Length: 329
Image (cartoon, rainbow, N blue to C red; front, side):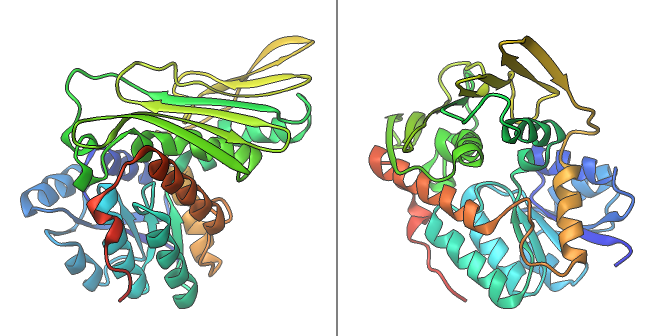
């Protein structure tokens, strides 16, 4: 497979950023795009030089024009699109969270394993060079055992996008924003033994703010996400010997700060592009190796995090219409 052919489903901002970064990979080619309207697909295709365009994702899948499908739709649409692609033997890189709930996620993982078709969550920070260097430093023991994790992700806008406010679109802070702090804490400490979640809900029943405490035998994680205040967007891990801190917009940083008895040290790591091509390159390596699971995006961890988000929603009373969507072919 000299060149990996990519298909793009949905033409929003994140799909545009991902497609722009694919141009940095000489062995990647975007051959098709699908949107809800042909006009949107045409505009996206003209912008990015894509030959084939469709107004239906199934038509793209049936065209056999791609090796990998990138799914950038709102959360409630992930399950149906990903399942159709995996059923057709087309590899999938699906935006996070991969589904509304763990039940749907488990079904996709089982289908991936049953068919031997690659499936991965597009949690791009896992492949970010700064994040990877950060975790190498953490594993070295420079701050001792991790005892406290802090992470937040939140913003304020006078007018929020409609998709963030509608339950039928999987709206709310937790799935859109909270998955970043949740993934970060999981990468540091794994699955907690207990969790407490609290939220402020909108009149429509989506969470405007959610805070979670994850408890471990000898550690704690405090995680916050929200859409009512401009949070600092900082993530840190602390131990007895110091701390490692990722600064604002920490999910795609250009450096981190190591704080120990020796003082503060800023650690910069070279990067290129917008940061999305690193996850694409990981998918392509795994695809060429014949894998159905990318080492950087472990299925079990993806499902564990979905289960934690499910529990947070259960505790805070956030329910989506798509939670009961039919599973199966």
